Length: 214
Image (tube, rainbow, N blue to C red; front, side, top):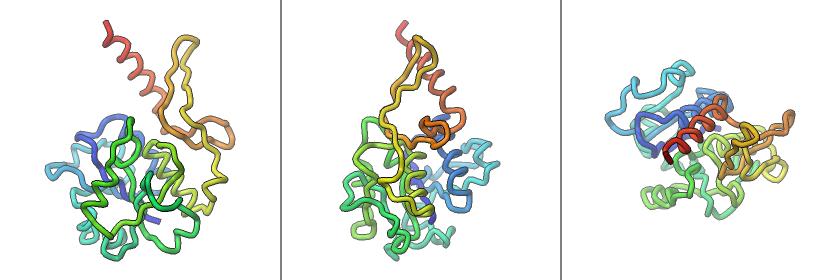
C-alpha cells in the first residue's frame, strides 16, 4: 500500500510535523510514502535535512497530478485512492487492500480541534475519493498512518489494535500534559507509540507555554 500525505501545514515544516513524517517513513518505508501539495515555491532546503537523508519523497503537485511524476502512486481517476475520513461511510478493513492502492491522510487528520479538511478534498475531487473511518476519535497523523498500515499491510483488524485515548504524559511530579488524540499502544512497553524525540519536544513546548504567561 502507498500512503500520501496531503500537506496542509505552513512551510517550513515545524519540528512536530518533521518528527511525525520521520516516524511514518520508518513505519511504511520511503518508497511507500509521498508528501504532496506543498506550496509551489517549496525548495529542498525547506525540508528538514533529516527527512531528506531518510529519502522522503515530496512534491508541490496536487492529487490529480502526482501520477505524472510518481506513477506508482496511481491516477486519482482510477478511483484506487482511499481517503481517511472521520465521516466516511464505513471503517477501514483488511479487505480494502484488494480495492485500493493508495491511502490518503495527513494534514486532514491530527489537528486539534479537528478541522473539516476532508470535505475540502471531497469537494475538489467529487466522486473520485472513497472515505473510510479509523474509529470515532481523532488521531495524530503518524498514528493514523500506522493504524492504516496495521490494517492494510499487516492485516490486523481495527478491533484487534490496542489503543490509548488522550494519554497523560508526565515529565515529573509537577509536569504533565494530556495529549488530545488516540494513540496505538506498544505491545512491549504498554506505552503510546510516539515519534522519537516527541517527548522532548512536548516538554519544551509545555515549558514555553508557561513562560509565555509571564
